[in-house]
Length: 231
Figure 1 (cartoon, helix red, strand yellow):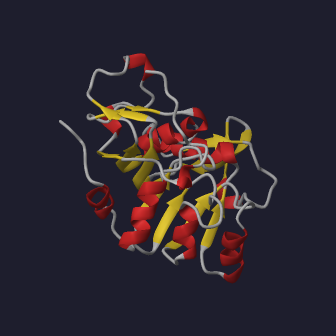
Figure 2 (cartoon, one colour):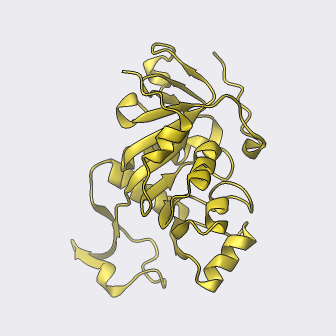
């Protein structure tokens, strides 16, 4: 079954108050067109989960600047002075996790587990006494899995069924988020018929994808995301 949707209809499935994972590693892999459609439609009170806050005036930063985001779960925002200012004023709540920890929390949710044990950050301010657990003679921190209502993903290539291929560092978080969200919306500039990919070349299988939006072109937002994928 084809999973093609228009950009407007795909994003219209997201209600205000939703928890939304956003793929990408800086600019690479960020689904700018999906984000910009949320900006246009105006969903509010969103909780966003993304590795970073993008740069000022781009990506999720635009949603934060426009007052549509209640909380950001991320690893760093140091490249975005405007988002830092929003945090310092109390306009948004920001929850930080080390980058590898954020990835593992998302991966754990996608694997159907509820959490995992780690010894990372045991003696730091990010660990509370209630987070600790003794097991087999050692003390560990309990890290809970992190899931979402929706995931927004940019794929370099896709087919109508939702099989996805990523490019470059876009592969860091996007496959994990596609497994950890209840509803996955994908944008791609290169959409074709099933059978175009060898099974071993597929990064995210179609079973995890709910809708695919074909982009007519990549805007200037994408910067270095010009795709040169071998066919």
